Image 1 (cartoon, rainbow, N blue to C red):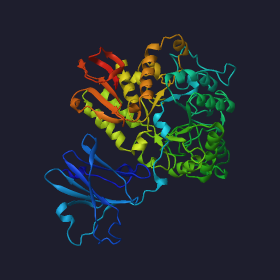
Image 2: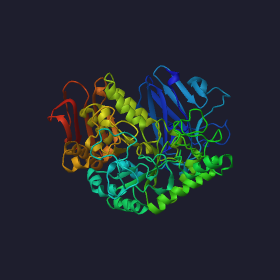
Image 3: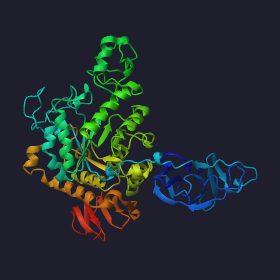
Image 4: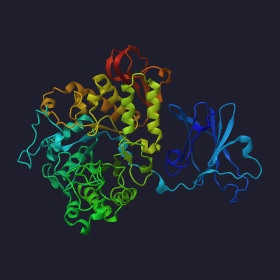
Length: 583
């Protein structure tokens, strides 16, 4: 037995409360293991002394997710007295080992007289400790908008000159295009008809840049975008259409025009705001990158000084900013930029302030890696699921990968967190921070296969503005170009738009596509044909076939077709997609 593969911690995704009554326990083993039995019971079932004979229950565990080199075994218990003590009995058919908190023991040695046992424990199932993200997020299809690039609604003079909206071949990241909040309002019916139920807006506040991630004033919407009244109207108009609104919070760093940073520049050591930042050398010198460490910034970018979110005054300042958004604008979610660099204390404070104002407020962190430590129920509800898009993309980049490799990669993604968190993970295939999916994929077949996966997997999927029409046609093309409304309104984008709308409709109309159990076709493990079902508790299913091979493939199904590309009713051509639902 591979002892090195056996791992468990009675915390995180290893042991957690699913709800107020149920406890989930997971363990990793090598694939040679044939059975895992959980030995468990209330820790005080026999008394309070360690030497008291402990009466136990034996519960077989089930294989839940297979990884590339390991197997995850799982069991869900309902502890009568809200606590549980346990260890594992693991067998490969030839050897049986017992895993305790202090290590592995051969079974015959466990019961030696006088041996002290270091059991695993889940001390108490406290309702307030249960990870409880907003349930609505799992049923939401998001649409990410960069306001500057989406739609112009204000046609009066603005503060700057804008790049030509319809002639963008020479556009770069410095260019602004003049989109605004009234423009978004004017296109809400388009967004609703696409099947969208949530809009994620990148930053709105006063800033010298088009992207607004270097904020000058957190209390003022940039006048080029509109007014507070426009923002309230956007939220109200969106809500009337069943669309929720999430805004971007840039609290890891400010811009250099931010009043507190300006005070530091002016007063140096005498500034009351010096400890709002990480200044290591005075006087502060700007004008070049910060690799010399004279002050800390985001990614060595000199005009983004890093805020000290450990400072109680900084915590309170931004808590008031967020309170205004929630109480006065009635937003539904906040996305935290560079969400892994702000302090845990800062996030816990914000959550304690905001959740009483709106219990189902969705708090999303921008984190590009394993985010377990931020998803324990006291900080974020969810994170941007970069491991998800990485797993999908890498399958199509590496043509040697098989269907099983994609399964193992996705299983790893979903093994990181509690199941209730998996249901609201913010999934996507492109965003303002990575290349457009259609460019990255290289052809429309792969683009639509990735889009199909996105919309039929567990989580809360997001469409980056323009992805629904296949924006992005060439390598290196700027990924924040304005929406081509003239082409859209003229019907020139209808072919791709109708297919995207059809896929979103499948997700919205089929509960199995949102929260069904994943059943992967293991008979195709050595192929590049991907075939899986999502099956709901009442037996309804959505079934997906993706042909990533270079040969035709014959499809067999009992379902009715609801979406197809390169499929003639029996044969799925290379690059083809076929989606079915139960009859």
